[in-house]
Image (cartoon, rainbow, N blue to C red):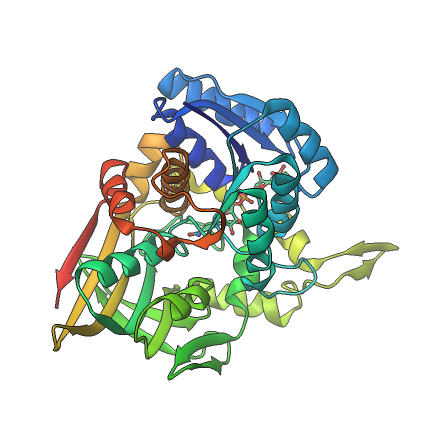
Amino acid sequence: MSHVLIIGAGGVGSVVVHKCAQIAEVFSKITLASRTLAKCEAIAASVKERTGVIVDVAQVDADNVHETVTFLRAIKPDLVLNVALPYQDLPLMDACLEAGVDYLDTANYEPPDEAKFEYKWQWAYRERFEKAGLMALLGSGFDPGVTNVYCAYAQKHYFDEIHTLDIIDCNAGDHGQHFATNFNPEINIREITQRGRYWEHGEWVETDPLAWSMSYDFPEGIGSKKCFLMYHEELESLVQNLKGLKRARFWMTFSEQYLTHLRVLENVGMTRIDPVQYKGAEIVPIKFLKAVLPEPASLGPLTKGRTCIGCLMKGVKDGKEKQIYIYNICSHEAAYNEVGSQAISYTTGVPAMIGAKMMLQGLWKEQGVWNMEEFDPDPFMEDLNRHGLPWVVVEL
Ligand code: NDP
Protein backbone atom coordinates (compact mmCIF):
# COMPACT_ATOMS: atom_id res chain seq x y z
CA MET A 1 0.00 0.00 0.00
CA SER A 2 1.91 3.04 -1.21
CA HIS A 3 1.47 6.66 -2.10
CA VAL A 4 3.16 7.73 -5.33
CA LEU A 5 3.61 11.37 -6.33
CA ILE A 6 3.89 11.78 -10.11
CA ILE A 7 5.36 15.12 -11.19
CA GLY A 8 4.72 16.28 -14.79
CA ALA A 9 1.31 16.22 -16.46
CA GLY A 10 2.53 15.81 -20.06
CA GLY A 11 2.28 12.93 -22.54
CA VAL A 12 4.32 10.52 -20.41
CA GLY A 13 2.80 11.67 -17.10
CA SER A 14 -0.66 10.88 -18.39
CA VAL A 15 0.30 7.28 -19.23
CA VAL A 16 2.03 6.76 -15.87
CA VAL A 17 -1.04 7.92 -13.95
CA HIS A 18 -3.40 5.71 -16.01
CA LYS A 19 -1.14 2.67 -15.57
CA CYS A 20 -0.62 3.18 -11.81
CA ALA A 21 -4.38 3.47 -11.41
CA GLN A 22 -4.74 -0.02 -12.96
CA ILE A 23 -2.73 -1.53 -10.06
CA ALA A 24 -4.48 -0.30 -6.93
CA GLU A 25 -2.90 -3.06 -4.80
CA VAL A 26 0.52 -1.38 -5.26
CA PHE A 27 -0.36 2.26 -5.91
CA SER A 28 -3.07 2.68 -3.31
CA LYS A 29 -2.82 6.48 -3.44
CA ILE A 30 -1.81 8.58 -6.46
CA THR A 31 -1.09 12.30 -6.53
CA LEU A 32 -0.34 14.10 -9.80
CA ALA A 33 1.36 17.51 -9.62
CA SER A 34 2.59 19.78 -12.40
CA ARG A 35 3.13 23.43 -13.22
CA THR A 36 -0.32 23.67 -14.83
CA LEU A 37 -3.13 22.42 -12.58
CA ALA A 38 -5.66 22.20 -15.45
CA LYS A 39 -3.51 19.52 -17.15
CA CYS A 40 -3.50 17.45 -13.94
CA GLU A 41 -7.27 17.83 -13.63
CA ALA A 42 -7.85 16.67 -17.23
CA ILE A 43 -5.71 13.54 -16.66
CA ALA A 44 -7.43 12.81 -13.32
CA ALA A 45 -10.83 13.07 -15.06
CA SER A 46 -9.77 10.58 -17.74
CA VAL A 47 -8.43 8.15 -15.11
CA LYS A 48 -11.67 8.42 -13.12
CA GLU A 49 -13.70 7.69 -16.24
CA ARG A 50 -11.55 4.73 -17.35
CA THR A 51 -10.76 3.09 -13.99
CA GLY A 52 -12.95 4.72 -11.33
CA VAL A 53 -9.78 5.66 -9.39
CA ILE A 54 -9.61 9.14 -7.80
CA VAL A 55 -6.26 10.88 -8.36
CA ASP A 56 -5.33 13.84 -6.15
CA VAL A 57 -3.99 16.84 -8.09
CA ALA A 58 -1.81 19.81 -7.17
CA GLN A 59 0.09 22.69 -8.72
CA VAL A 60 3.84 22.67 -8.07
CA ASP A 61 6.90 24.32 -9.60
CA ALA A 62 9.51 21.58 -9.40
CA ASP A 63 12.33 24.09 -10.05
CA ASN A 64 11.56 25.58 -6.65
CA VAL A 65 13.15 23.19 -4.14
CA HIS A 66 11.71 24.93 -1.07
CA GLU A 67 8.16 24.83 -2.47
CA THR A 68 8.53 21.15 -3.42
CA VAL A 69 9.93 20.18 0.02
CA THR A 70 6.98 21.88 1.74
CA PHE A 71 4.61 20.02 -0.57
CA LEU A 72 6.35 16.66 0.02
CA ARG A 73 6.24 17.14 3.79
CA ALA A 74 2.53 17.93 3.58
CA ILE A 75 1.45 14.95 1.45
CA LYS A 76 4.14 12.42 2.55
CA PRO A 77 4.51 10.25 -0.57
CA ASP A 78 6.59 7.05 -0.55
CA LEU A 79 8.08 7.85 -3.96
CA VAL A 80 8.49 10.82 -6.30
CA LEU A 81 8.13 9.71 -9.92
CA ASN A 82 9.60 12.51 -12.02
CA VAL A 83 8.18 12.77 -15.55
CA ALA A 84 8.58 16.54 -15.83
CA LEU A 85 11.60 17.59 -17.90
CA PRO A 86 15.30 16.69 -17.47
CA TYR A 87 15.90 20.24 -16.13
CA GLN A 88 13.90 19.30 -13.02
CA ASP A 89 15.99 16.19 -12.13
CA LEU A 90 18.45 17.90 -9.80
CA PRO A 91 15.96 20.18 -8.02
CA LEU A 92 13.69 17.17 -7.46
CA MET A 93 16.58 15.02 -6.18
CA ASP A 94 17.48 17.87 -3.78
CA ALA A 95 13.87 18.07 -2.62
CA CYS A 96 13.67 14.28 -2.12
CA LEU A 97 16.86 14.31 -0.03
CA GLU A 98 15.53 17.11 2.15
CA ALA A 99 12.08 15.56 2.63
CA GLY A 100 13.33 11.94 2.88
CA VAL A 101 11.54 10.46 -0.16
CA ASP A 102 12.73 7.92 -2.79
CA TYR A 103 13.11 9.16 -6.38
CA LEU A 104 12.69 7.84 -9.95
CA ASP A 105 13.01 9.49 -13.38
CA THR A 106 13.07 8.62 -17.10
CA ALA A 107 15.70 10.99 -18.54
CA ASN A 108 19.03 12.23 -17.25
CA TYR A 109 19.77 15.79 -16.19
CA GLU A 110 20.43 18.47 -18.77
CA PRO A 111 21.50 22.01 -17.91
CA PRO A 112 19.00 24.38 -19.60
CA ASP A 113 21.71 26.59 -21.13
CA GLU A 114 23.78 23.76 -22.66
CA ALA A 115 22.42 20.96 -24.88
CA LYS A 116 24.32 18.21 -23.12
CA PHE A 117 23.15 15.27 -21.08
CA GLU A 118 25.36 13.22 -18.82
CA TYR A 119 24.89 11.08 -15.73
CA LYS A 120 27.75 12.76 -13.87
CA TRP A 121 25.50 15.33 -12.22
CA GLN A 122 23.10 12.69 -10.89
CA TRP A 123 25.78 10.09 -10.06
CA ALA A 124 27.32 12.79 -7.85
CA TYR A 125 24.29 12.32 -5.52
CA ARG A 126 25.20 8.68 -4.75
CA GLU A 127 26.75 9.28 -1.36
CA ARG A 128 24.04 11.70 -0.25
CA PHE A 129 21.27 9.22 -1.13
CA GLU A 130 23.17 6.40 0.61
CA LYS A 131 23.68 8.47 3.75
CA ALA A 132 20.01 9.47 3.79
CA GLY A 133 18.97 5.80 3.39
CA LEU A 134 17.15 6.69 0.17
CA MET A 135 17.07 5.26 -3.35
CA ALA A 136 17.10 7.04 -6.70
CA LEU A 137 16.40 4.99 -9.85
CA LEU A 138 17.54 6.72 -13.04
CA GLY A 139 16.16 6.33 -16.56
CA SER A 140 13.13 4.09 -16.08
CA GLY A 141 11.54 4.77 -19.49
CA PHE A 142 11.99 2.68 -22.64
CA ASP A 143 15.30 3.98 -23.90
CA PRO A 144 16.85 4.51 -21.41
CA GLY A 145 15.02 2.00 -19.27
CA VAL A 146 13.73 -1.14 -20.93
CA THR A 147 16.78 -1.20 -23.23
CA ASN A 148 19.04 -1.34 -20.13
CA VAL A 149 16.90 -4.14 -18.67
CA TYR A 150 17.03 -6.07 -21.99
CA CYS A 151 20.84 -5.89 -21.75
CA ALA A 152 20.84 -7.10 -18.14
CA TYR A 153 18.47 -9.94 -19.12
CA ALA A 154 20.71 -10.97 -22.04
CA GLN A 155 23.76 -10.78 -19.79
CA LYS A 156 22.04 -12.98 -17.17
CA HIS A 157 20.44 -15.62 -19.42
CA TYR A 158 22.16 -15.64 -22.82
CA PHE A 159 25.81 -14.55 -22.61
CA ASP A 160 29.00 -14.88 -20.62
CA GLU A 161 30.15 -11.70 -22.36
CA ILE A 162 28.32 -9.25 -24.63
CA HIS A 163 30.79 -7.90 -27.21
CA THR A 164 28.68 -5.61 -29.38
CA LEU A 165 25.43 -3.82 -28.65
CA ASP A 166 23.20 -1.93 -31.07
CA ILE A 167 20.11 -0.32 -29.57
CA ILE A 168 17.69 0.38 -32.42
CA ASP A 169 14.66 2.62 -31.93
CA CYS A 170 12.13 2.59 -34.74
CA ASN A 171 8.96 4.63 -34.86
CA ALA A 172 7.09 3.26 -37.86
CA GLY A 173 4.04 5.33 -36.93
CA ASP A 174 2.60 8.40 -38.66
CA HIS A 175 0.69 11.30 -37.06
CA GLY A 176 -0.10 13.05 -40.35
CA GLN A 177 1.45 16.36 -39.21
CA HIS A 178 4.05 18.15 -41.34
CA PHE A 179 6.40 18.26 -38.35
CA ALA A 180 5.80 17.20 -34.77
CA THR A 181 7.91 15.49 -32.13
CA ASN A 182 6.62 12.50 -30.18
CA PHE A 183 7.86 13.75 -26.85
CA ASN A 184 8.69 17.20 -25.54
CA PRO A 185 9.85 19.13 -28.66
CA GLU A 186 12.54 21.12 -26.88
CA ILE A 187 14.18 18.06 -25.31
CA ASN A 188 13.76 16.00 -28.49
CA ILE A 189 15.32 18.59 -30.82
CA ARG A 190 18.20 19.31 -28.42
CA GLU A 191 18.98 15.57 -28.38
CA ILE A 192 18.78 15.00 -32.13
CA THR A 193 20.87 18.00 -33.16
CA GLN A 194 23.79 16.98 -30.92
CA ARG A 195 26.92 15.33 -32.29
CA GLY A 196 26.69 11.54 -32.59
CA ARG A 197 28.79 9.39 -30.28
CA TYR A 198 29.42 5.68 -29.87
CA TRP A 199 31.77 3.57 -27.79
CA GLU A 200 34.44 1.33 -29.28
CA HIS A 201 37.49 -0.39 -27.78
CA GLY A 202 37.29 1.55 -24.55
CA GLU A 203 36.79 5.04 -25.92
CA TRP A 204 34.10 7.34 -27.25
CA VAL A 205 34.12 8.11 -30.99
CA GLU A 206 32.29 11.24 -32.23
CA THR A 207 30.43 11.77 -35.52
CA ASP A 208 28.67 14.79 -37.03
CA PRO A 209 24.96 14.95 -36.08
CA LEU A 210 22.98 12.20 -37.89
CA ALA A 211 25.94 11.68 -40.26
CA TRP A 212 25.94 7.87 -40.14
CA SER A 213 23.03 5.72 -41.19
CA MET A 214 22.17 2.08 -41.86
CA SER A 215 19.11 0.17 -43.00
CA TYR A 216 17.60 -2.33 -40.59
CA ASP A 217 14.92 -4.86 -41.44
CA PHE A 218 12.45 -4.67 -38.55
CA PRO A 219 10.36 -7.75 -37.69
CA GLU A 220 6.64 -8.54 -37.84
CA GLY A 221 5.99 -6.78 -41.14
CA ILE A 222 7.48 -3.39 -40.24
CA GLY A 223 10.22 -3.91 -42.82
CA SER A 224 13.38 -2.07 -43.75
CA LYS A 225 13.91 1.47 -42.39
CA LYS A 226 16.79 3.92 -42.40
CA CYS A 227 18.30 4.41 -38.92
CA PHE A 228 20.69 7.16 -37.85
CA LEU A 229 23.49 6.89 -35.31
CA MET A 230 22.96 9.16 -32.29
CA TYR A 231 24.37 9.51 -28.83
CA HIS A 232 21.93 8.27 -26.22
CA GLU A 233 22.27 8.39 -22.47
CA GLU A 234 21.97 4.67 -21.66
CA LEU A 235 25.25 4.05 -23.48
CA GLU A 236 27.06 5.91 -20.69
CA SER A 237 26.00 3.50 -17.93
CA LEU A 238 25.87 0.34 -20.07
CA VAL A 239 29.53 0.61 -21.13
CA GLN A 240 30.37 0.60 -17.42
CA ASN A 241 28.04 -2.23 -16.40
CA LEU A 242 28.15 -4.80 -19.25
CA LYS A 243 30.94 -7.39 -19.15
CA GLY A 244 33.41 -7.53 -22.05
CA LEU A 245 31.70 -4.89 -24.18
CA LYS A 246 33.80 -3.84 -27.20
CA ARG A 247 31.31 -1.61 -29.05
CA ALA A 248 28.00 0.08 -28.16
CA ARG A 249 25.89 2.19 -30.51
CA PHE A 250 22.40 3.71 -30.59
CA TRP A 251 20.29 4.16 -33.73
CA MET A 252 16.95 5.87 -34.37
CA THR A 253 14.71 5.98 -37.46
CA PHE A 254 13.66 9.34 -38.94
CA SER A 255 11.61 10.05 -42.03
CA GLU A 256 13.02 12.24 -44.83
CA GLN A 257 10.21 14.72 -44.14
CA TYR A 258 11.19 15.02 -40.47
CA LEU A 259 14.87 15.48 -41.32
CA THR A 260 14.16 18.10 -44.00
CA HIS A 261 12.06 20.18 -41.60
CA LEU A 262 14.70 19.82 -38.89
CA ARG A 263 17.47 20.93 -41.26
CA VAL A 264 15.53 24.05 -42.28
CA LEU A 265 14.69 24.92 -38.67
CA GLU A 266 18.36 24.55 -37.74
CA ASN A 267 19.56 26.56 -40.73
CA VAL A 268 17.29 29.50 -39.94
CA GLY A 269 18.24 29.48 -36.25
CA MET A 270 14.95 28.23 -34.80
CA THR A 271 16.63 25.44 -32.80
CA ARG A 272 18.98 27.84 -30.96
CA ILE A 273 18.91 27.54 -27.18
CA ASP A 274 20.48 30.93 -26.43
CA PRO A 275 18.25 33.99 -25.96
CA VAL A 276 17.80 36.51 -28.81
CA GLN A 277 16.40 40.03 -28.49
CA TYR A 278 13.00 40.62 -30.06
CA LYS A 279 11.25 44.00 -29.60
CA GLY A 280 13.04 44.57 -26.30
CA ALA A 281 12.30 41.11 -24.91
CA GLU A 282 14.49 38.02 -24.71
CA ILE A 283 13.21 35.01 -26.63
CA VAL A 284 14.84 31.55 -26.77
CA PRO A 285 14.08 30.35 -30.34
CA ILE A 286 13.67 26.64 -29.41
CA LYS A 287 11.20 27.54 -26.64
CA PHE A 288 9.20 29.66 -29.10
CA LEU A 289 9.32 26.78 -31.59
CA LYS A 290 7.96 24.42 -28.89
CA ALA A 291 5.06 26.81 -28.33
CA VAL A 292 3.99 26.62 -32.00
CA LEU A 293 4.52 22.86 -32.50
CA PRO A 294 1.83 20.32 -31.60
CA GLU A 295 1.89 19.13 -27.97
CA PRO A 296 3.04 15.50 -27.88
CA ALA A 297 -0.02 14.70 -25.76
CA SER A 298 -2.27 15.92 -28.63
CA LEU A 299 -0.87 13.33 -31.08
CA GLY A 300 -2.66 10.40 -29.44
CA PRO A 301 -5.79 10.29 -31.60
CA LEU A 302 -3.80 11.11 -34.77
CA THR A 303 -1.00 8.55 -34.69
CA LYS A 304 -1.30 5.23 -36.54
CA GLY A 305 1.21 2.40 -36.89
CA ARG A 306 3.72 0.79 -34.53
CA THR A 307 7.01 1.33 -32.74
CA CYS A 308 9.73 -1.32 -32.54
CA ILE A 309 12.54 -0.75 -30.04
CA GLY A 310 15.10 -3.40 -29.30
CA CYS A 311 18.68 -4.45 -28.59
CA LEU A 312 20.81 -6.43 -31.01
CA MET A 313 23.67 -8.11 -29.17
CA LYS A 314 26.59 -10.32 -30.16
CA GLY A 315 28.81 -12.12 -27.70
CA VAL A 316 29.90 -15.49 -26.37
CA LYS A 317 28.30 -18.20 -24.24
CA ASP A 318 30.26 -21.31 -23.18
CA GLY A 319 32.96 -20.41 -25.69
CA LYS A 320 30.50 -20.17 -28.62
CA GLU A 321 29.62 -16.98 -30.50
CA LYS A 322 25.96 -16.03 -30.52
CA GLN A 323 23.69 -13.18 -31.52
CA ILE A 324 20.29 -12.25 -30.12
CA TYR A 325 17.71 -9.54 -30.71
CA ILE A 326 15.24 -8.58 -27.96
CA TYR A 327 12.46 -6.23 -28.95
CA ASN A 328 9.00 -4.90 -28.25
CA ILE A 329 6.43 -3.79 -30.80
CA CYS A 330 3.84 -1.31 -29.58
CA SER A 331 0.79 -0.15 -31.52
CA HIS A 332 -0.04 3.58 -31.41
CA GLU A 333 -3.76 2.85 -31.83
CA ALA A 334 -3.85 0.16 -29.10
CA ALA A 335 -2.05 2.53 -26.69
CA TYR A 336 -4.55 5.26 -27.51
CA ASN A 337 -7.52 2.95 -26.95
CA GLU A 338 -6.16 1.86 -23.58
CA VAL A 339 -4.93 5.13 -22.04
CA GLY A 340 -5.59 7.94 -24.56
CA SER A 341 -1.91 8.41 -25.60
CA GLN A 342 0.33 7.46 -28.53
CA ALA A 343 2.94 4.71 -28.26
CA ILE A 344 5.98 6.94 -27.54
CA SER A 345 4.36 8.20 -24.34
CA TYR A 346 3.05 4.69 -23.64
CA THR A 347 6.41 2.95 -24.07
CA THR A 348 7.93 5.48 -21.63
CA GLY A 349 5.09 5.61 -19.11
CA VAL A 350 4.65 1.85 -18.65
CA PRO A 351 8.31 1.21 -17.64
CA ALA A 352 8.19 4.26 -15.37
CA MET A 353 5.22 2.67 -13.59
CA ILE A 354 7.01 -0.73 -13.46
CA GLY A 355 10.21 0.84 -12.05
CA ALA A 356 8.12 2.48 -9.34
CA LYS A 357 6.38 -0.85 -8.68
CA MET A 358 9.77 -2.62 -8.33
CA MET A 359 10.83 -0.05 -5.73
CA LEU A 360 7.57 0.05 -3.79
CA GLN A 361 7.33 -3.75 -3.65
CA GLY A 362 10.92 -3.91 -2.41
CA LEU A 363 12.04 -6.04 -5.39
CA TRP A 364 14.54 -3.37 -6.39
CA LYS A 365 15.58 -1.65 -3.21
CA GLU A 366 19.08 -0.30 -2.53
CA GLN A 367 20.30 2.89 -0.98
CA GLY A 368 22.04 5.27 -3.37
CA VAL A 369 21.66 6.24 -7.04
CA TRP A 370 21.18 3.40 -9.53
CA ASN A 371 20.80 2.66 -13.22
CA MET A 372 18.33 0.07 -14.46
CA GLU A 373 20.78 -2.65 -15.55
CA GLU A 374 22.19 -2.88 -12.02
CA PHE A 375 19.12 -4.78 -10.74
CA ASP A 376 17.75 -8.30 -11.36
CA PRO A 377 15.98 -7.95 -14.74
CA ASP A 378 13.60 -10.90 -14.28
CA PRO A 379 10.74 -9.33 -12.27
CA PHE A 380 10.83 -6.23 -14.49
CA MET A 381 10.73 -8.37 -17.66
CA GLU A 382 7.76 -10.34 -16.25
CA ASP A 383 5.92 -7.10 -15.56
CA LEU A 384 6.57 -5.80 -19.09
CA ASN A 385 4.67 -8.84 -20.40
CA ARG A 386 1.91 -8.33 -17.86
CA HIS A 387 1.40 -4.59 -18.25
CA GLY A 388 1.32 -3.88 -21.98
CA LEU A 389 4.87 -4.10 -23.40
CA PRO A 390 5.46 -7.80 -24.22
CA TRP A 391 8.88 -8.63 -25.61
CA VAL A 392 10.34 -11.24 -27.93
CA VAL A 393 13.84 -12.80 -27.94
CA VAL A 394 15.12 -14.02 -31.31
CA GLU A 395 18.35 -16.04 -31.51
CA LEU A 396 19.91 -15.11 -34.84
P1 NDP B 1 5.78 17.02 -21.94
O1 NDP B 1 6.38 18.30 -22.36
O2 NDP B 1 4.56 16.49 -22.62
O3 NDP B 1 5.46 17.06 -20.36
C1 NDP B 1 6.33 17.59 -19.42
C2 NDP B 1 5.49 18.04 -18.24
O4 NDP B 1 6.38 18.53 -17.22
C3 NDP B 1 4.53 19.17 -18.57
O5 NDP B 1 3.24 18.82 -18.12
C4 NDP B 1 5.09 20.36 -17.80
O6 NDP B 1 4.12 21.19 -17.22
C5 NDP B 1 5.80 19.68 -16.65
N1 NDP B 1 6.82 20.58 -16.14
C6 NDP B 1 7.79 21.22 -16.80
N2 NDP B 1 8.49 22.01 -15.98
C7 NDP B 1 7.95 21.84 -14.75
C8 NDP B 1 8.21 22.40 -13.48
N3 NDP B 1 9.20 23.28 -13.30
N4 NDP B 1 7.46 22.01 -12.44
C9 NDP B 1 6.45 21.13 -12.59
N5 NDP B 1 6.13 20.58 -13.79
C10 NDP B 1 6.87 20.94 -14.85
O7 NDP B 1 6.96 15.92 -22.00
P2 NDP B 1 6.82 14.34 -22.12
O8 NDP B 1 5.70 13.87 -21.27
O9 NDP B 1 6.85 13.99 -23.56
O10 NDP B 1 8.21 13.87 -21.48
C11 NDP B 1 8.36 13.78 -20.07
C12 NDP B 1 9.75 13.26 -19.73
O11 NDP B 1 9.92 11.94 -20.27
C13 NDP B 1 10.90 14.09 -20.30
O12 NDP B 1 11.90 14.21 -19.32
C14 NDP B 1 11.43 13.25 -21.44
O13 NDP B 1 12.77 13.48 -21.70
C15 NDP B 1 11.19 11.86 -20.88
N6 NDP B 1 11.14 10.81 -21.92
C16 NDP B 1 11.85 9.66 -21.71
C17 NDP B 1 11.83 8.65 -22.66
C18 NDP B 1 12.51 7.35 -22.39
O14 NDP B 1 12.27 6.39 -23.13
N7 NDP B 1 13.34 7.21 -21.38
C19 NDP B 1 11.10 8.80 -23.94
C20 NDP B 1 10.29 10.00 -24.01
C21 NDP B 1 10.35 10.98 -23.04
P3 NDP B 1 3.39 22.36 -18.06
O15 NDP B 1 2.67 21.67 -19.14
O16 NDP B 1 2.52 23.02 -17.08
O17 NDP B 1 4.48 23.25 -18.59
